Length: 103
Ligand code: FES
Image (tube, rainbow, N blue to C red):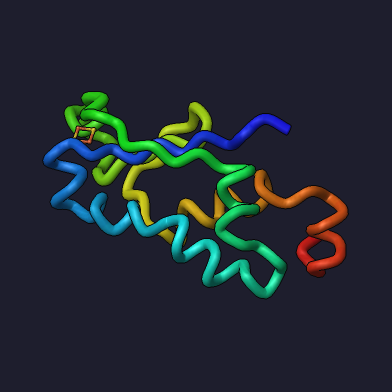
């Protein structure tokens, strides 16, 4: 299975607008999804998190920082909650979602 790529902007604007908190994504995901058997190891097998220099998304007037990408989808006003919401359906298999009652 191909890893899900999460890129978090670490440029100054994003960083001061809340991007620094996004770097806790893995920790929070494991804390919240632990009830479904997600460990750090399992998370890291499926998700690759990386910092990203400013992509100039912060210069677009219609979008607000902090920015992140999940695979190639740009997420503006990213929060841990919004990233986990986008990640959840990508992270868990149909079988897992069914046993979690998330289908
Ligand atoms: S600082 Fe994040 S897109 Fe520019």
